[in-house]
Length: 193
Ligand code: HEC
Image (cartoon, rainbow, N blue to C red; front, side, top):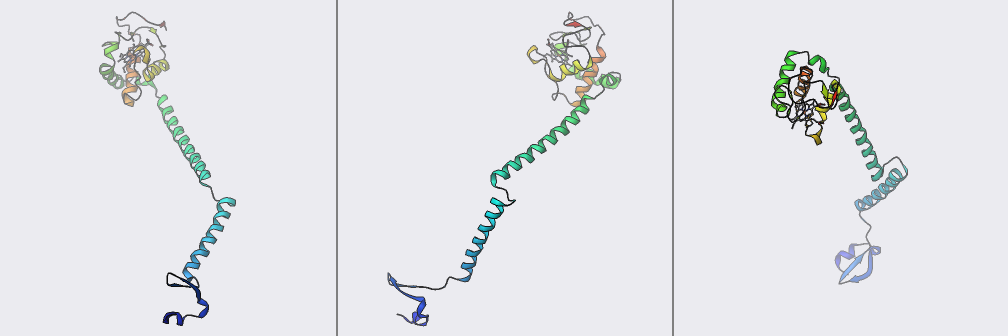
């Protein structure tokens, strides 16, 4: 026994000596014990709260977040639908009566459409837009629909999103304005309106 051990209370000292090191039986430090108690308390709280209480398990949390995300996506889609409904309510017939819109629409037509529909819409690869015959219908909704979505397999492109919104609207106004102007050109195709 060395000097240090002499100062210890006898019960702290054990008989075990290992590699010349004498094992002692000290009390565990307070901070260590507190950590230990806190982890136990945390464990009890955790099980009670997350397994039996209102706490959410990771998969429940995920499901909740997915639901919130889905709800958010739906509202965004509804908003978008609401605004594009607004676009669908564009009064093309009124635009077709506005000279400035029609003039702007003609510019768009000359830039984008004449390659197939010819300078005045009398038809080339694409049908004559000035006669009374329409492949897809000559009412405004049908015309908007064809220009919006195209007839891709027949070589008519979809223009929605390719043209800016005002170009899109005005070119429709222009097409409406040349309707029944009967410019001599490509032979009639489709049904007489
Ligand atoms: C690459 C050639 C091409 C271009 C460019 C093109 N079209 Fe067409 N378009 C066609 C063809 C081909 C058809 C006929 C589709 C069919 O047979 O179903 C057509 C059909 C149409 C129709 C329907 C005609 C009907 O009889 O029902 C409209 C309206 C129309 N185009 C407008 C436009 C406008 C406006 C533009 C420019 C923004 C445009 N097109 C650009 C080739 C074109």
